[in-house]
Length: 252
Image (cartoon, rainbow, N blue to C red; front, side, top):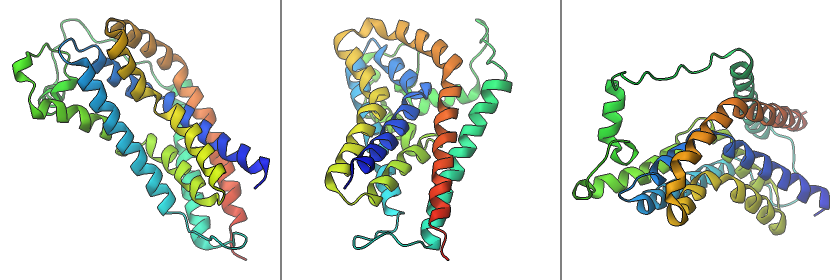
């Protein structure tokens, strides 16, 4: 185990964690729940638990798809080439899309004050009542209400196409590292950054719940302006790195 290996693993974990933090929709969802006046702590706590479960599942999936070779040097194989090339393709595709959005994508049009809610928005309010901005009485907060917070947290990671390549790449890196210390540092670096969009709203709901609406407004404006190019740079850089590793694994 060399220092270079540790630094590389921590760089992968930190970069993928930053990429997740730079996706504003998760934090905005959490701030929306933290701004709920009826049950902000329970909503954000369940949102955090669901996100943690989803993120863990993706990391485990990424590790399980990586061929294990505990003894001797890692040998090139078509399986290893396909795994690395798949991660590289996903990251480059996402980075290219985000770069296109930043340079050529149209800015979202503001919603008119008198614009009616769409049928999809009404359906989401029914399926996920904890996400609704309409006031809800305490007597209406049953099992379905709080399970919706848990499911929103889980869906925001496990079924989020932007999160899947980031978390799975960390799992892939953990499976390749044989030293326990290197694996631990990589995982801790990733987790300490990636979990922020879920843990920060929980902290706000506990200590300063009144700050959530203002924070959400500021964050939305900042990430709409800067989030796309931040994610684009990270994805393109690590996508190219994964492709280099893929061709190193090409058999023959």
